[in-house]
Image 1 (cartoon, rainbow, N blue to C red):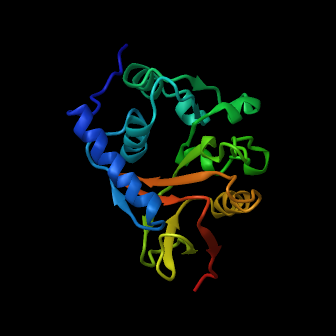
Image 2 (image 1 turned 120 degrees about the horizontal axis):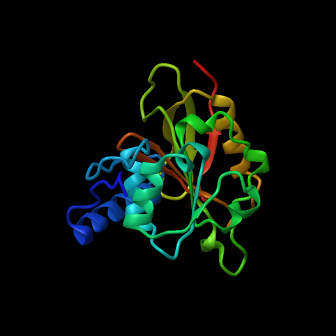
Length: 214
C-alpha cells in the first residue's frame, strides 16, 4: 500500500465531531457545516472523506463514480481505514446495493441520473436507502457568481432557506433534483452535497425548488 494517508487523529472524538456536524446538516437542511479534521484521500474532497470516515464501515458497501474508482489513493485508503466493499461504477445494476454513493465533481456532468438504480428503501425499512454524496465546485447561502439558486422548505427550516450551488453542469444537478421528486416519502434518497470542507444536506423530507436566474 503506497498511498495510505492519515485518518482521524482521535478516532472516537473526531468521528463524534463529524457525526454531530452531519446531524446538524441533516436536521437543518440548507445549513452549511464544516468538516476540517482530515485532508481528502487522493482526489476526494476533505468533507467527502470525513463523511465516509464518520458514517461508513466494513458493513456498508460504497459505490464510487469512475474518477474515484480509478484513483488508487481513494481505493487504498477506504480499504485500509474502513474495510468497506467498493462497488464498480460500470456495474449500474449493483448501485442499489450501496449504502453510500460518492460522485466526483469531474463525473457529475456525465452522470445519468435517470438510469441510476440507487436503493430508495422500502415501506418497512425506508432508512436503508442509499445516501448519495455529490461533489461540486462551491456552496453558499448567499448569491455567488454563476450558481444554481435553490429554495429549500420543509422540516427543520423555519420559513425558507436559500442555497447556491456552483457547478460545471447545471443540467446534471437539475436532473438530480428531478430524481428526488420521483419517490414518494418516506421512500427516497438523501443527498449530501460537498465542496472542499463544506457540507450541506438535502434529505428526502426537504422540498427543493430551482429559482429563476436573476
